[in-house]
Amino acid sequence: MPGGGLHLSVLAGSTIPVPLPAPMAARLRSVTVTESDKDRSLFSMTFDAGRSGPAAVMDTALLTASPVAAFARVVLVVKFGALPRVLMDGIITQVELAPGRQPGSATLTALGEDVTYLLDRVEADAEHACLSDFLMVQKILLQYSGHRLVPMVIPTPVSDPVLPVEYVPTQHDTDLGHLRQLAELHGYVCYAIPGPAPGQSVIYWGPPVRQGPPQRALSVDLGPHSNVTEVNFRLEALGPVLLDGEVLDERSGQQLPVRTAASLRPPLSVLPLWATRQGDLRRRRFRDSGVTITTAYARAQARVDAASDAVIAEGALDGARYADVLRPRGLVGVRGAGWSHDGLWYVRQVTHELSRGAYQQRFTLSRDGYGSTVPVVVT
Image (tube, rainbow, N blue to C red):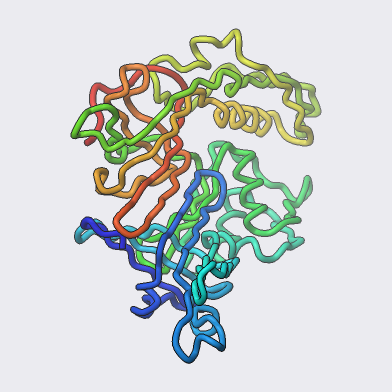
């Protein structure tokens, strides 16, 4: 499954994921995986759960003797030729059985989310004395090494010294909730990257990845060279914002102004909306208190950067023609859509839909404006 030079492997188990037994793998009908740059990734697997034979009067075998059960760890691996790619490393959180209209027919669907679930199980009240946000994140993530979760933590651009005489950083949330609260303050993101080996994931805490080599290009309206089956582009003029306000600097005791002028992210377009229509942008007040002026500026800039994208692309990709796995949280090139929309884009979300003989990838891309910044994209 799904065929055409593409193979999907499913591993599952209560502790260590192992390949599904052949009879159960043969019952797999479809798989859906949704990966996002902000929310946790989700997956679903649908099996033929029909009953037959003497044991049919007892119960559905997939419910009574199956590794696909609540809280089992599941790994989905897609292989193009000899190249395996870990598509999902997650935990089953829901199992649904739907009897069919014909006697003995039924479908079983297992749904779950990525391994950040492990960071979201226990709500805690804790103190992290003398630790900056960067060190706090490292301390929290090191607790999960036994689950084969590898931390990738990027230092924050601004970090005030944490003086115990001023305050002690505290946590009143799950570890995942706390990590994402800290990430939002710096314009960062926190998510799980499945792989590189099956049963292993990287927990990334850092800025959105908007630099580096792009993924294989999405080809639009190029005849036999096209791999995009549908796409639409839209401008969201109310997306970008600017912030200004005042803050009472907790170190000097002075009331100081906070102003932002533009996004500091590397532009992905020649004509970013925040630059060409700056006078028309929405302006919001910065209202945080109890911080230094340095932290105030960093937080205000982070919010401006996070809202800088104004052009959105949504569409679908033929997985067989693309011959690769499009991943969110990175760059991809677009060609064939015209100068305004060609070039580099940031991948926000991808939904992978796999069934026997078919693989479709639905995507959401974004960038800050019109016009390609590169002459060609990688194909």
